Structures are given as C-alpha cells and as structure tokens.
Figure 1: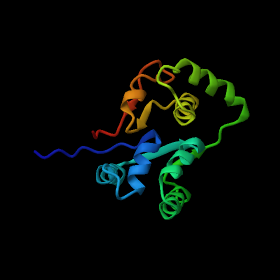
Figure 2: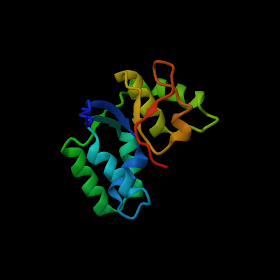
Figure 3: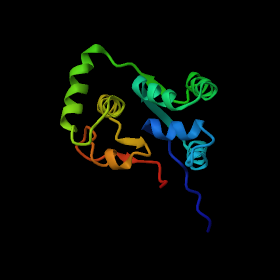
Figure 4: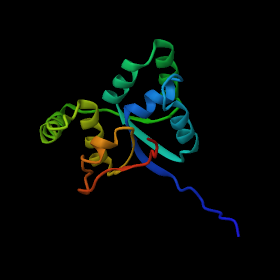
Length: 145
C-alpha cells in the first residue's frame, strides 16, 4: 500500500547561507536549496542581521528579488530590541571559540524567545554546537552537503 504521509507545518529559523544559495543561481547549492524551499511547509523566522548578511553576498538585482520574497512573507522578520543586546553579547562570549557572529547570535536568541529549535542552515558545524533554549542542539532541517 503506498504511503500517504502528510507533511506537517514546521516553524523554523532560517540562516543566511541557504538564503544566499536560494537567491544566487550561481551558488553551488542553489538547486538543492531551491528544492528544499519549494517543498518546505510551515513558517520561517529570521533576523535583520541575517538579512544584512544575505544582502552583503548578493548582487543588487538579487537583493531586490530577496527583499520582494521577504515582503511576500517568505520569512517573518524579528526586530531585536535594545534590551536584547545583553543576551546577544552573552551568547557571543559563550561561543567565542567558534567564533559566533551577530547573525548566528540573533538566531539563537530568537530561537529562545520563540521556543524554536529547528533551523534551516548550511552551517551545521556551528549550529551543532550552539544550544537551543531546551539545552539540546538545533535540529537542521536542511539535509544537503
């Protein structure tokens, strides 16, 4: 009997790497990330530091397509309040041996704030070390090399 598995909606954080690959057709992971995003069912959350990092690596025309995707709800953008700066600094200090940048710190912070432990990232090396609010490693939904 054929499987009738239903994909349940997932709430996940999204890091810069997959977004760069998605919006840059010359990226070696473009096709794999495009397939992932096409099949993703759920809601993604990200932060302004991640958006800034993505835009740094995209051409201006690619940035415009990315920003249009965000405007259409491709990912929910979280604001980082000034009151969160202490938490971000604490995370950066905690993972100084990685080192953790502000974009990664903002995602770990947002995950704790929203109680999200799933992430879409190419950076498995760091996100297997970073801990979600539940004390466990983040679960990377992106299964590509």
